[in-house]
Length: 115
Image (cartoon, rainbow, N blue to C red; front, side, top):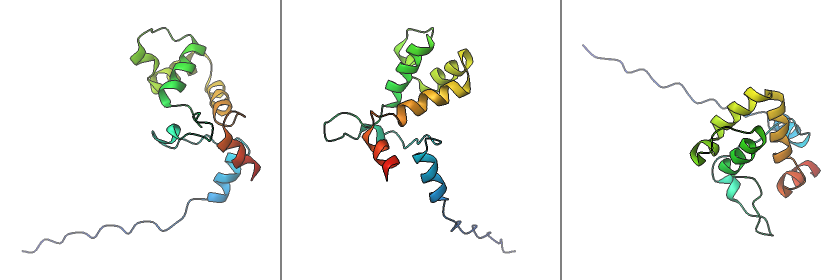
């Protein structure tokens, strides 16, 4: 008796709504998370274009008065952001992240908004 192997589903050919995503980025209504290596890119002045995950976690830990002094806890972005929301709100966390990713310090984001 022969066994039939099901064919895999074809991959979707739909494209993401790039226009909507670009508009959200330009107006500050989206926070891009690009992956671990993206924050290590340097600008012409050799300063990071984006904060690293651990640097962002440390900054948020300081602001929220994160109770642990253990460096592993303070640089755990998931743990710190969860605490940040617990002591403030999800909206306040979103506002703080927006200020880091669309602030004037980051030339890439400024250029993106101007185009």
